Picture 1: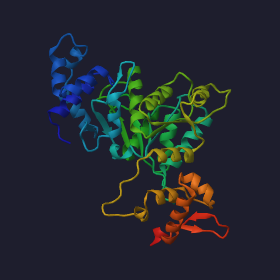
Picture 2: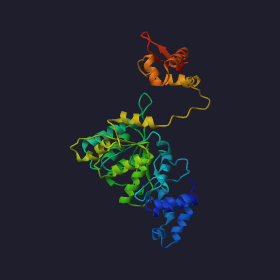
Picture 3: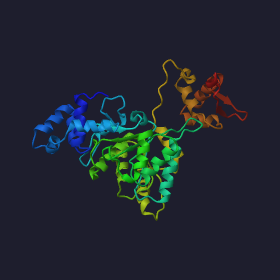
Picture 4: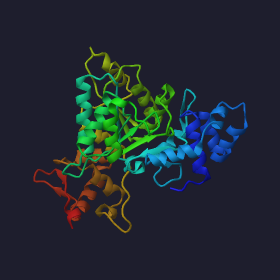
Length: 379
């Protein structure tokens, strides 16, 4: 990481401008960070002018280095691509990608996006909500014998559901990322400092606020948009209708991320928000980590094929491929059912099955039904 003029200017802006300020975000789309910073220093009518004049940028950088932080800016190799989606989302005069990202911890936040899941909820969580969050995060974060799992868990480090999710991931020796609404040199809330320090040792603490800055209500709302943007999907475990977790979900919906909710007792005020999201079709009902993992996997992009690597299905034409994909993963089905499922006329479906059988990709059962076979994949 090189402290060039652009990086220094962005670091200075994180020490002065409120996070999520859409005006600054729009300026950075048209001007360099250096120009924006010098404009704040020169123009006495600017909102952040006095704060900019009194900021010691060298001290900000020195504090970050003392606390073993790194400062990411757009274009860096470790910059999370998901944050760029914030450039086109604005809510209540808040929006835009962060000016920069302060990070503590060994985890590379750029690599956590694709398999990551945000788990959020209310601070005054019930034992039911905390148990669900711990178990869900633990199951998602650990690696299973079939090679699945290892999702990074993203949350906000707050009391209740947030810290329960972090604890579940840590117990599984998984990766967890905590997005804070303050500088990373003084951890907040203090009651969760021990958990946050463990995250700094194995995962990552993230903030768009420079060292020395204290949490504010707007800062928490801005933090919520980062949680939503860093994750491939967001799960809300327990929350009333008016809560920060609902705000995180609204950002996730705006960004087109998967939004999931765990249902709760209809008599519990802690579940009014989650139940309403499910009722109104704004969140998918999930019961456990398996439900969450399945939804996130469906939305994940197909992994790139190594150069020069071919698949057995590459030799199939469009009709044969459609019939092959329509074959059930388990059991078998008849010709008419398969034809309807593949959207292929019966005669063409029958001809395609003959080709697939010759290639070892389909098998005709004794009762005349057809099943898929992986013989071609074992060659």
